[in-house]
Length: 321
Image 1: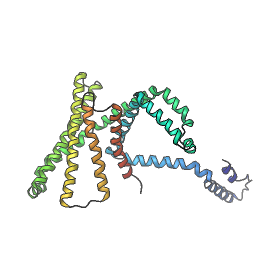
Image 2 (image 1 turned 120 degrees about the vertical axis):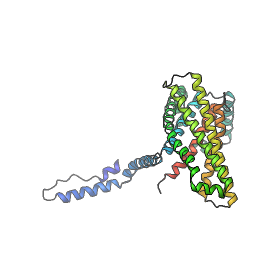
Image 3 (image 1 turned 120 degrees about the horizontal axis):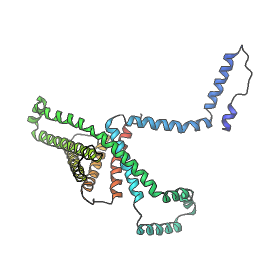
Image 4 (image 1 turned 180 degrees about the vertical axis):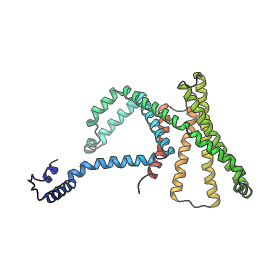
């Protein structure tokens, strides 16, 4: 603020015959003020916030990107709630305590002062004291985002219907007939994968929304029926995941067989999708199986990380050049 004061114009008494000159002097002084270090520091956070919001707006421009972001936020909130609700095992506490004692002996004092958490101790103590309350807030946020993305996915049935229509009408296309004659093996594999993909999505979207509408009282079915619908929707999701994995592996084998050269961006995109689908495999089994495969904290972290991979890729794609 002292810098800003030094560039403010001194009070002047304007004469009636010199209005333009006075206005020009005032404009110059304001411009000089905006160029001062203090002014730049004040505007920098606003510019960063504006750039972040603009980037976020570009990312959410399509329905797929919007769904991915909401799903990631839902999984992240669920993970934080689960982690806060899970008590820390005594064995882990003792292990951390022993490691801290070893670090105190071997870490140089200067580095130790940098690693010190004393300045954050009040916040840490406050979080520990209100851990249950914070977990409840994240759980509530996760539930809201879950409802949001389920409602959004309801409209995914429309896109899946369009895919199914195009798939069925493609059998009468002349181009399809020529492809079937020229490479029948590739034709059959692609059609089988595509059919599995559509069936999986139809089952997943439809059954999940029936279960959700039952939970919200739209359909007066029993809780047992709702649970069965949700389990079957997850099984349909598993079918979709398998079709995605089959498509990725088939594309890779075809590119190797034909010797097709792929650029680094294409290979990176393939790896990203492969890791994501690979993680969704055990997660799907965990969600279907009673009791699950992993502790809920690990499962929720893997789910959040899986969607983070998607959001990170979309964030890079929508960056301004």
